[in-house]
Length: 226
Ligand code: CA
Image (cartoon, rainbow, N blue to C red; front, side):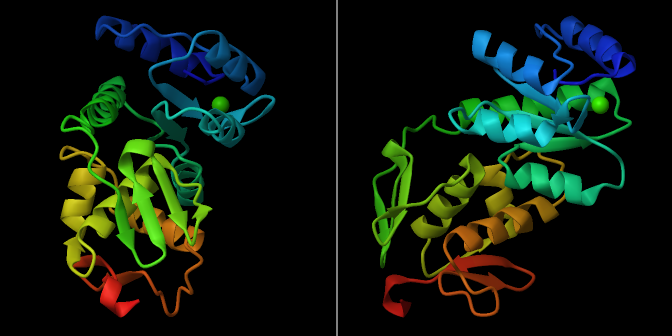
């Protein structure tokens, strides 16, 4: 738990303890990075406003070499906060003031998703025009150039490539890439798709790969269209 306000950390740590989680608290950016190095956590709850910097810096730093699930603790009304966090690779967010119960539910959903995602083992490599993706190697390239994708972006792209040429509904994307019990805003999906488009160098006015099917979902162009 990375948070400097004891009025939040103390009751939350107690609630998590009762649920069987072992919690350690870091109150600063420096402390968070140091303890993550010393003892890699299974999940990170991350506040945005910290005394020596921003939780975004912690998120960015952790994402350099780790896919540890991250849940941002964000202030009410700060929608841009949530979007920035998700773009930096956070998995979900909760809005303050939150109940311990809500946080526990999010933690369980995120952990279930990150543990259960690969039960059947990764599928084979995919190729659509100059776009290539290899689930086993967690690698995606465009014209031979490696794409730096977050876990969610990678899974979105994988699903869209698997179904290239066909529409994948918003519901299915959310179900398969997040969790069936996911109760965040569906805006999260749009944020990830636009970030993915940007990384693919798409022209938002005239996307080449990922097409929006209004009211339904998204479609990756089939090889015959590219
Ligand atoms: Ca704070």
